Length: 280
Ligand code: TA6
Image (tube, rainbow, N blue to C red; front, side, top):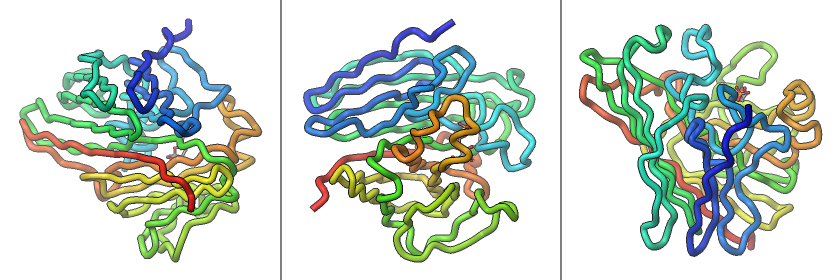
């Protein structure tokens, strides 16, 4: 059974779409540009399945969690049906607000009551904000990420600026995750899967498409950079064999040692925004 078609977002200076499934943004095209968000042509659009591309919401754990034992990968938020709270416009942007609530009993691997609210605001810019509230009577912590799949012309001709000097966890190293330090701009010559300790903005220099995608974050201490390259792309059934050069994940989150701890009644809002500049 397929998902209903994505809900369109129409603004004066941009178009987009999203699914209530996972509250997943599936497209964003600012006026005067080609699409900025990538979606696999092989994406499986079915309930209970994570959509390959767009902006999956990773919550309440990243990967298999800090214990390395949690399933499904990247938590349950991206395969849950979020409630559409409102859609509209703020005059400049198209806006959608979605919500997800959970009780303590629902997932024993997490086991806490929470309320999440997600806001998509798009036009010539993309602004995403994820707010999580502890509605339980005890403190708990969570990991989160907005797992953004950017569309690039050819990842082999992309440079990522803004991570110089940052330490990162190299998840693609065959010896197991190793802590390394970034020196200078990040170029791509193979599978890249890194969790950076970084709160700063990122510039994705896309030589093939003559553009720069600028990513800015608030209350996000982790930046994940991922491209599967050839072999891992071939191993994913929902990822076309020839698609890997045309995507790059730049994810904003709070992961591992930067997981967020909330006292009862406390909430945390992470923001992730993007805009496009011409490459001069
Ligand atoms: O964000 C990078 C990553 O953790 C990679 O290790 C890779 O697994 C990617 O997420 C996609 O994960 P998924 O569960 O959507 O296949």
